[in-house]
Length: 242
Picture 1: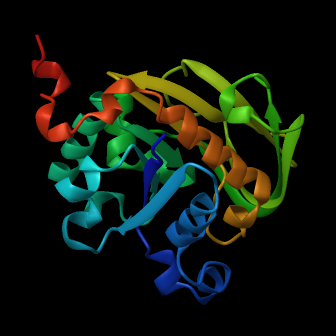
Picture 2 (picture 1 turned 120 degrees about the horizontal axis):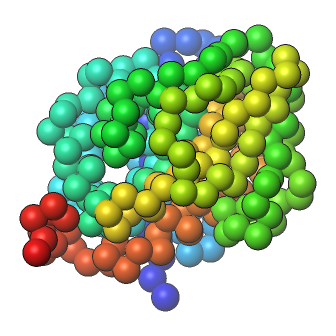
């Protein structure tokens, strides 16, 4: 059985601008996630960043990508609309998409969700987050206990302006009392999409073993679409298929 090919996309701005973030992720958030995935059976991960030509998401890269992981925060508006549309079409034709943390504000997530807000409450006080697993039988929750606890994180709170998830896997609780839908599954066209909340850049969240396990589980889940196995160059955009 062939490996699942993953591309981890990151703005790679915080790590260059902040010594605090650079100390946590000296090679970037994208490398921290890709390095973990490359140590898992059946997964093969590469990376792409905003300042590369075509944001690193050339046709060649996307054609070999079964699942794209997206982390963005500072520079959502700098992502080319042309690249966003190209990625959107890949998702509709079967490529999986994992959107992390502040990626809820990205153009690609909003294009696929049909919303341009993704508004939520937030507070960056380094509070404890407890992520409750409410669907323990779901493949994304494989190998987890009742909850994941992150000692310090940025708080995201409801109301979160997103479409109702097809499946809700996790709900977060924070020390201030807020709750948040933190593990949301969607299907758009033939593509599987998972939004996973944790990942503020000033905390070592992507060194947390259970957070990384969720990402690996979600990659395997999102790669299930059979259309993802075809060359996208030979598949017409979904809206034009009759």
